[in-house]
Image (cartoon, rainbow, N blue to C red; front, side, top):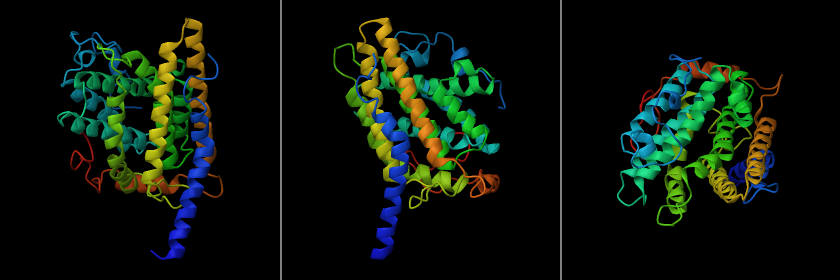
Length: 333
């Protein structure tokens, strides 16, 4: 690459980061630490509704495999995520990008937990992984069923944008990530627990996830660009996203989520906790609106037509790059 092309690429990437961070990341950063103020092929039924004994609390003796964190829970989690990912892919729904991202990341988690010593407490990690997935699928199926009252506002914005085909492929990904990380994750962490029975922090295992989040980013973006929207990997223009920019965004949002979970857990009263929760909801909603401002199609200048046409031709294509867990199948897991 020539010096001129390199400088041009750096300028465009910087411009993209600036627009997205201004609209989304800045809003999320405001919540870092204690907040300022204390249509499917199967029925639209969240899996938590038909898994007997489900609870977000980690109970190693539970008969429910996911509550107890048994290894077989991961298969149930993957099956549920694949159900959403495959349905949205075959219909070329704009939800397909985030749904596929979630499935791939969960597959990669499965790869990482098999590495001896990667996590200090694998059963707990299994449980946390399942609870986190449940927050997504509950919102998705409640939305599909018309039960908007049960869907957080950040998720409503993301799912409305997909329904209306309002944003780019990058926008679809960012809206889903924002709703799930900035909104859902603090509540998940607070529910499952930040401290182990021996009093040690669970933060080291939480941070260990970022090692594979980084390596999973490149094949993930490549798959999206090959199957759903070719502009997703155009990191040198305002509509795409680079591997590094995406990872940095996710890393910062995850740190914010942990600090907000600490604020939830340490709130001295129910009213104080409600204030923290409201602040988390507001920050995620504001971030979603920022993403809409930077990633929406502009009538007369851009539209989802090319994206939809491309998806119909390529949604069944095999992923072009291997993940840490190996070569992924177009459908299933």
